[in-house]
Length: 291
Image (cartoon, rainbow, N blue to C red; front, side, top):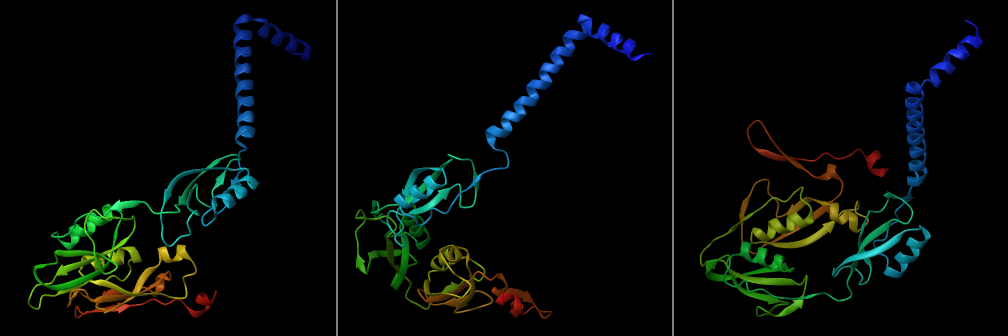
């Protein structure tokens, strides 16, 4: 069959309306899909993005200038009051630092308020320590120090204090204020149990210690901690008094804590063949530590 005959054959085929119409429709669909994906690629700038900078710690004015340089938009969606942070500075952002976003993306910020919100101090007199802790935390307060006195109501709240002074319930105080509690400890030789908080972060360790009717003493960080983020991630690697197992201790005693972000420094408990327990610490090689 010659080239001309082949050409004539296909011409006759495509002149047939039963072939021509579906072929045109198929071609249009293919073309539409092709141009759609090309448009989508350029519209979304596939594989490209702007890295979200760190806004935490900046003032609102500084954050706006930085956002303009990166062609990003900012929106303050919430405010909190953290006494340890400078008022008016950014404390949280979403998306987080280092995320890849498109140009003109909106970044949502939480800012540290200039003044704390005032809330009423709830009445926790007469309830147990565990109940008092839950009530106070629900209202935005924290427990600072536990004091104990001889009283038949063991571990029940007798007084609530601020800076050593008795404070009545309903008093307006800055949200986040620390409250001291006076509790009963019985008349005999009642004691509480010393918990082991090795391996816990500071927040959890404090909760465990307070719920055990004890106080947090000195808090020390090792050389591995460099900034606030490290302190939030750090875990307890040593405590004093120390114990491999729970042991009796006087109500209100202080527990000192040492924290690190070096996981290898945190000991774990292992049992010997005679069922006695001991702590084992896995230290990193000196070369790795230096690096």
